[in-house]
Image (cartoon, rainbow, N blue to C red; front, side):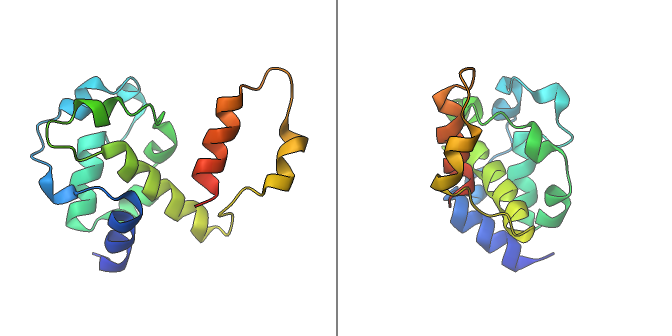
Length: 127
C-alpha cells in the first residue's frame, strides 16, 4: 500500500473517498460499465484502501468517459469520476507528459474536432 499515491489522488480529486458506502449506484449508471475492469465504486474503494498502483496499471482509467453520471448519481457526493481522472493524471505525470501547451493546440485543430474535446484535453493535461 502506497500512502503517497493515495494522498496525492485524494488531494487532486478533492473527493471524500471515505464517505463511500459502496452502494454501487455510481457503477450502475456508468454508460461504459461493460468496458471497465474496475468500476467507479471499486475505484473509490481501492483508493480508500491505498491500492492506487493497481488502478494506475488498469486500462479502466482510459475507459472512463468523464461524463460525470456517477457523480450525479452518488447519494453521498463522493465524485468517483474525479477519482478516476486523478488516477489517470498521476499516470500521465509519471510518464512525463503532464500537460498540453496552449501553443500545441493550433496543430490539433480540424473542422471535425468539437471544441469540447480541446477544453477537455486542456482540463486533463494542464493540471
